[in-house]
Amino acid sequence: MTERSFRPLPAEPAEPAEPGGSGGSGGSGGDRPTADAWAAVGGPAGLLDRVSFRGPDAVLASGLPVRQLARATVAACSLAAAELAAHRDGGPVPAVRVDQGAVATAFVSERHLRIDGRAPVGFAPFSGFWQAADGWVRTHANYPHHRVRLLAALGLPPDTAPERFAETLRAQSAVRIQERAYEAGALAVAVAPPGESTHPLIESRTVDAAPARPLPAAPLPAAGLRVLDLTRVTAGPVATRTLALLGADVLRIDSPHLPEDEDAHADTGFGKRSTRLDLADPADRAAFEDLLATADVVVNGYRPGALDRHGLAPDALLERRPGLIVAQLCAWGWTGPWADRRGFDSLVQAGTGIAALTAAADGRPGVLPAQALDHGTGYLIAAAVLRALTDQRTGRPGGRHLRFSLAGTASWLVRGIRPEEGTAGGPYGPAPWLAETGSPYGRLRHALPPIAYEGGPTDWARPPGRWGTDAAVWR
Image 1 (cartoon, rainbow, N blue to C red):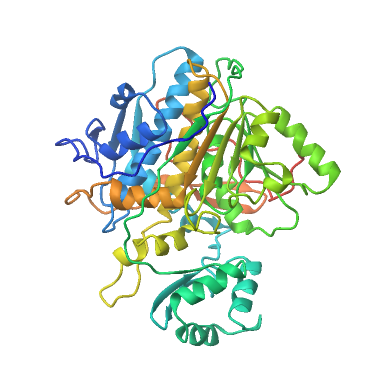
Image 2: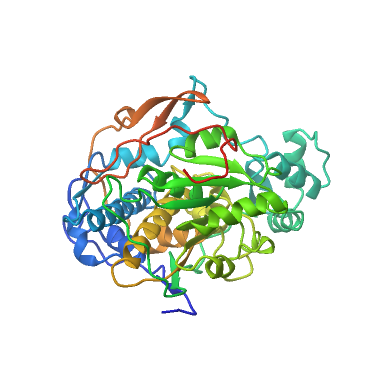
């Protein structure tokens, strides 16, 4: 059946958790965030009793319910993996036991990464909070082209020192800086007070009635499935890194004209392969179409409309490949005046009121203890894809178009999850959830995956390869 419109899960305030249902151990039957995340990906409520939690409660400390969001998204993804595994093997759905220490470690995986003992570079000098004439503004300039655009938008030369940059910002209003940056293709967002606008956590529609190809029994739930990974930075790569963990053949495709932070790829490239294709080049375009012809899933993390000129709009992909699952990610939601704007987790925190809600006593804007919008959305994407794969084979065939946004996850965090009063547990140390692996980048210390169900994988089958160096073919 074709659905012309999306079915959203509104980001509404959650009901109170059942007594005793949200502690660090025991069942999840009363854990409302997990139930909401599972409902958002279309999961049958009867499977929630398969989920339990353990491990330290004293993780991801924040005035907002970050710990609850993090473990709920991982639990939903783990349950979706367990459900698909059971479908393929014909047995009962395995138990899901999510460790909150593993979740907390994975949600800051980029901070734990070491490459031959070296810590990756974090935010660049022109990325961060800056005082404006009437408040604060958050900038993002980690990529060189974003830094150049930001400085140009403010009338500054490329060799401007951070001190001169700060002086220039203090002389202008935050919204003026924001709009000048937007017009120049740069990234700056005025720190906003908490607002009332909400965005759905997930939107979905069934596009056609194409029958799903049968999946034989396999040791991993996504084994044999092919995923085209058109994502960058964090949220999308976390989703596809998770699908690779679960056995999918994931091939990331980037333009040869866009730079990438190879330290970031060393974190999110586990289990995947990576190639570069210029879709304006006839030979590269033919290679892409060959890949699409047998793909099961496409995950697109580019700004809405950015790939449409290449014939990669969701409807165009689904027309050429009936039965495909297309998952789309954006920053600011799919409707409204900001829908087509660029954005990153840090900017969405600033623009949705999270930075104001977590501000310090002196008024300086705050941040979440992790890039929780990125990581949480990544696990939701993977969960929804896994559920769609199961759904296609258990009574609802047809292609799927799934939509996610960082703003939707932010709405859920701020207005859809009721904070818990007090948490128990001793000091948290990440060591049990870290491992070392050799790779083409060198010796990597990395966070282990938090996905946990009985019989499931505990680490990726392969380390990240060098970005953009693999052949544009399926395994």
